[in-house]
Image (cartoon, rainbow, N blue to C red; front, side, top):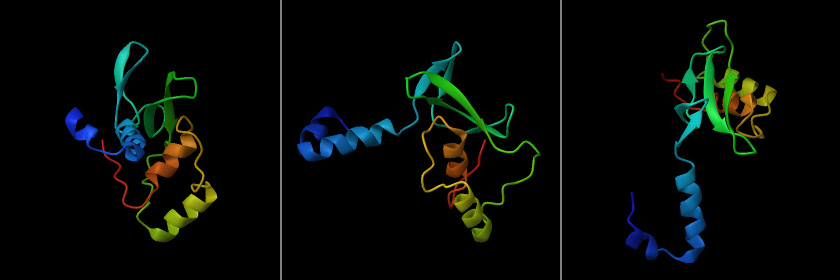
Length: 115
């Protein structure tokens, strides 16, 4: 992490870039009385995956997504990945508080589905 003096040396045009970059990192929030990580997909719950995100009003919500049959998603096959991303319009995935955004996020090339 950079110190304040290191930030002083950066020109004003780039300050907005730094702020946006730091905001993309995983943050903690509270959901129904428990501490949770935001924007970090995890396996489990009612669907295959779930993630906690902030919606347009600033509330923390739980987004469940994925198939529940237990089949692997086979996203490493280029033809399947291309077909899925075209079928779900992954070029414009929508807001983070929608399941389509996170499903498209899991289907990007080189993605890891850990945890």
